[in-house]
Image 1 (cartoon, rainbow, N blue to C red):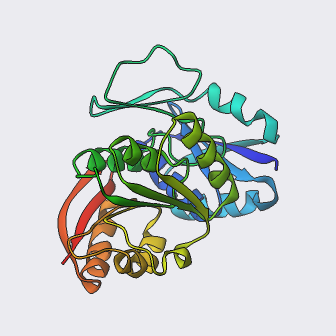
Image 2 (cartoon, rainbow, N blue to C red):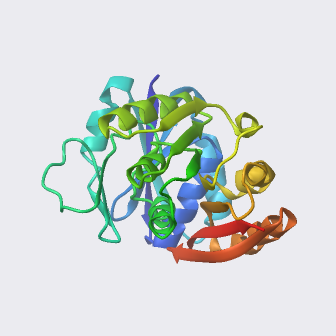
Length: 278
């Protein structure tokens, strides 16, 4: 399938505005994002692209900033070339390197993860992915059953595998991430990962010691009850994909579902939070 690459140049540029723009574009079917000094590049399946919808969203959302747009069609076979020109290695907590297969000169760290993202979210560049990785590094994973919900590239599932999780399920609702996950898992020689195409309905009857969900606020709130139902007592739920101002809303829903707050991290106004089931 062909995709549309939308370039959004923000004047004056503001990191927080860029993050808001990315979040809002994600709500109207954009799937992947890259960011340069003053420009957000967003990718959407060509049949879903509606420029008027984009302009209406940003005029209402960002009245004090000027955003200029350009867009082009990216044919399916050209996607890797687009990412190769933008995707730089990411180092997180001096323990994890996330790189593409064409990167060879990277630091030696405990966890070296190769991600060729294609149309999937999750390369470590976005604050939410980085926050999730940091939190996973602080969480006991060895011997645990892990769920990567809304897996994207399956980066988090692969990290859990490298940290000796006994079983990992990776789930995404979109076919592109599903296929990309299979490739990334194979390229990393990751073990004990099963990938599924679907949503929270797949969780019925499943049990996990650790649930990872990096999605968005609305889905997290709507589906939290399903995540909690999968957890045994003292099981852990780690979530990201929302802003600091959304944390009270997430917290309220967590309390409604019998979760106990443990900790949270913030980066560029994005949050990752950890709970246990009490």
